[in-house]
Length: 220
Image (cartoon, rainbow, N blue to C red; front, side):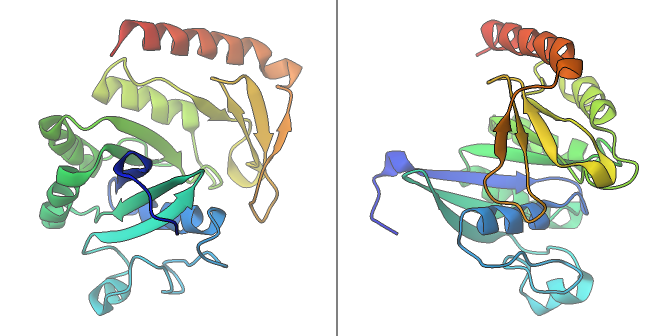
């Protein structure tokens, strides 16, 4: 990786309740950026970030792990943190150096206890936050319910930027509300196909786009 100035190096921290999929998300980020040739998994004990013997035994993160990816002339440092409150010190340490937090929500479970606990830390550090609704390909996933719960817990500043066309086994496309376009993904990932928003979704997308613009205009 080429030497970059500080303006082109970004630190982000992955946060969320245990089991929400932070480590799996990190694996996908590494794969899509071309850093790895395969996605590791918790089940097969071959993820990049969970490599300590204790983590492999438990099947969950115990320590924060630092990963990095090149992306469009930037170096993005990714800190994958544990989800259990027993290891909150790891979260606090990561928040001290992160420019932005990515709160991962399980689309099946919504906002969980650990999410609320971690949110208190992010509020103390005034960390800007993005929410990622994860595990949309699982049976029982509910994107709209998860976003509704996030609004109830964290305020009306929570606003959708993208939403899935379908969830569960048929999940393969997202509608980008900001750019008003649909992205459809191949089964193995990679660059998605850029498509028009289906007619049946246009009214919903336009309303959510309006909500997004109004939220941006009324907040810092």
